[in-house]
Length: 99
Image (tube, rainbow, N blue to C red; front, side, top):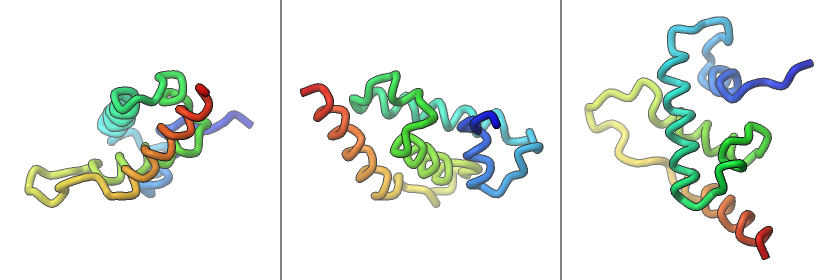
């Protein structure tokens, strides 16, 4: 059985049937934006781009759930604190592997 793509995982987390494509462009943009945020935060691009790392998966899910369908009405002020915690953990794991 082929592994799920990150887009499929995100759609399932948002309760969007994987066969629906109406939101694919926005979801793909959010996934890419999160990956770029990880890279600029110090996560190596090969890790940020991996769909198999559970921390990366969790970070992408939090990010997309925060911003998907976001209306510019001020309802989303910042990423949840869980995002920052997971990001620090991922950066620490990467730093410890470099030693």
